[in-house]
View (tube, rainbow, N blue to C red):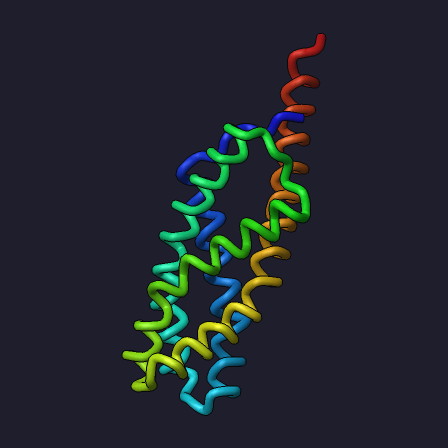
Length: 152
């Protein structure tokens, strides 16, 4: 079944869900691992999430356009490429932000970002797969309901 194009509203919901769940999962873990307060790490993850949310919406829109233009399916290989591209783009902002916020060097910030990447790659892959599965079920249910209401 051809999936309907995602609206801006749906893209915003997708990004917001992704970031809220990510902050709730990873801020306490990072605070514990790095020995910073939950408040400081929470603020940093919210800052990163704000940037990531905007990047998420832009990157997913571009990725969907490429997918429709070249006609490739959302296979595991495509999902891995998606996750790598998304997380790779965040490096450009996260490293300087973490270095500044945590008063650490660029190398430490890069290593922190590498750790975040290791956490977020599987999370990104799993979240998007679950989101797409859920969306497909909802769309299918709406189509069936619409078809049933048209029948005499």
